[in-house]
Length: 258
Image (cartoon, rainbow, N blue to C red; front, side, top):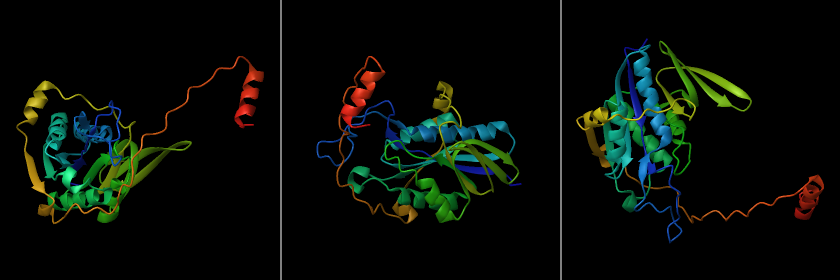
C-alpha cells in the first residue's frame, strides 16, 4: 500500500458553459475578449473527486495539487480549485494571444514535467475541455509516463495499491483495475461538484500559488497544428407538423426519405 496519495489535478480556464460561443470577425477562432470564463466543468469534477478521496479516508492523501497553464487570469480558476479543497497550486504562465493555444501534446508534456518534479502518483483530469473537445491529454500523458490509464470514469474505488474504475460503455458498464501510479480521466456521472463556501474562498487566498514559465520547464509553445477556418454551424430550419400517418408518409416521400 502506498504511504499516501499525491494527487495532481489539472484545471483549465474556458468560456463559461452557459455562454454561447461566437466566431471572431476573421473566422480564425472563437471570440474570447469580454466573454465570461470559468473552470472547465470536467475539471471541477476532477477536483471534487480528489477531495472526496481524501474525505473517504480509505487511503491517506498527503497533497492535492492543482495546475493550470495560460494567462494571468488562470489564477482565478486555481483559487476556485483551492477553495474547493486543493492544498496548493501551480500556474504555468504564457500569453495565448501571442504564443497560440497549447495543444494537447504540449499540455501532456507540461503535466509529465510536473508529475516528475512534484513526485505525483495519481493524476485526475477531466476527460476533455468544453472549448476544443479534444479528449486527448489524459491518454497522451499516460503514454508519456508509461502509466496505466482509465478514461471516462463514473466511479473510483481504492484497495491498497489497486484502483478500480467503472466507466460507461455502449450497452452497460465496464470496470477496469490497475495499480498506482495511474491516470484517471473523469466523466459527468462521477460526482456533483460542491460550491466553494465563503470561508473556504477566503482561506484559498492564503494558500500557496507557485508561478513558473514554460522556459522553467524546458519547453516552448511551438504549435504543430494550424486552424484554417472557424465557421458558425448553418442555421437549423424549423420543423413542420402533420395531422396523420398518411400526411407523414407523404411528407417523407416529398423529402426523399422513403
